[in-house]
Length: 244
Image (tube, rainbow, N blue to C red; front, side, top):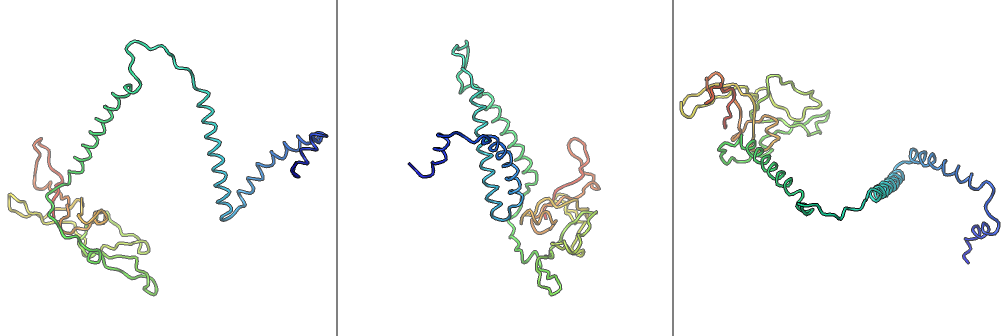
């Protein structure tokens, strides 16, 4: 007989202590508070191990509860087959087709939206980052090199305000900020000086588009309301996309 079973043997011969179950109940009640205190006081790797253990216990408990709930809600299926009934695998076929049609429609709309800016863009040479940005050294000893100055023409809106120098990563010099563009009409062969509404797409990437950099191949939107252009429906054209 193993040496560790002497407690069980004593209990078999003489029974439990008179207050055994009361002490056990109190100990289990205290255990919750002890675990809570331990979780709050634990630091570093010990707290991580403790949290991982607690999470595993909770997940197991939730799985067990869900399993029991599922088993309790099961009921016997009627054996009688109604007239005109369809097999299970055909029940949601119509819904699937509808969902497929709906997803195709959404994809088509997305394509149309994406194609709105598609103009015959020539194959432009990608601009290198060194050419687009100039590294600005900052700090007392000029050791920090996280700031960049844009060296190309940019567009910023009329209500543009610069960030505080401490937080401004990309500096757009005021001398290179443009609000107007010379636009040549291909049929009239005339050049107009029009206000820029915004930069729609820069072929070098979305970062340059968000900064409003206007390099070769960029699509910008200009205000053509002064030209008096109208749509076939008779509405005045406000903005028009052009290619630089």
